[in-house]
Image (cartoon, rainbow, N blue to C red; front, side, top):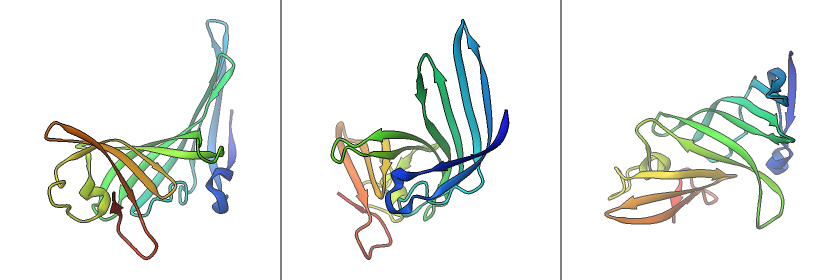
Length: 169
């Protein structure tokens, strides 16, 4: 079944922006178990990820129902603006352990990897060629793991008020 879908992203806080999708609903059975897939492409993806320096290009709805539970997901392509590097992302809806509220958490990936310099938009001495792993973005904060000379660490990036480029901690 095809049709227009509307997703009101109340988890985005004050931005509570609706996203309009051209969608498809597939329903069937797999070994007697009901299966429903819900897919679609948003007419505009602007605002789904608020991490500055990351421009979302497209937004796809990727949800399914099987064996009594929904798996809600969003995915698409984005660009690291400063580096003109195309990345892919997958968004899951997760409940915050701090606030108890639901929030969108995006996992980022790119062919050839993503470095701290890619995220920052400027070269970071000693980290220019160090690939980040398990990159997640929640609101305007990014957390990733990195391995350097046999050591692993977690790195965070955010945009303090008045800063155009990311700051790392």
